[in-house]
Image 1 (cartoon, one colour):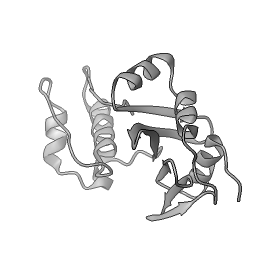
Image 2 (tube, rainbow, N blue to C red):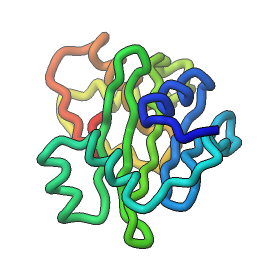
Image 3 (cartoon, one colour):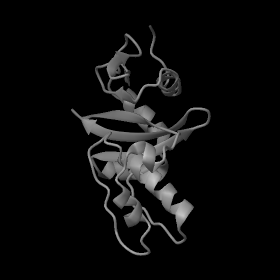
Image 4 (cartoon, rainbow, N blue to C red):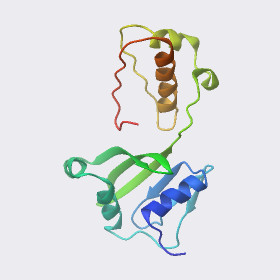
Length: 166
């Protein structure tokens, strides 16, 4: 099977309900679909190919930031497909990428089984809440449900600090 475009890979990822898309030099583009890594092509990515893709999705400021640092974290959106968190990084002197599909359905705090004390904390007029955890642990989903709860039940400002913003 021939190499597919980045946009086609995103569409396949969504159509097959995959979670992550991987680009690494010397390997074919692959996706994690229901926990199993599946290649999208028999052809491996050649040196420089992933950098071209990465540059095509970054704006000028992001390109400058990536040039000065070892990685770039960002979010992209594609009409009809949804939102994706993108991690662009260097390994073995080549650019690699991991793209995570972000869910569009927002469960409420009850469906997530969040402890009731979090609803009390999120409803406070002042304070700082740090929400931390490993990749894929549900931080963004839980925080989105908590912010939704606060918006529905109290008034005031909410400030979030995220990298990348989701």
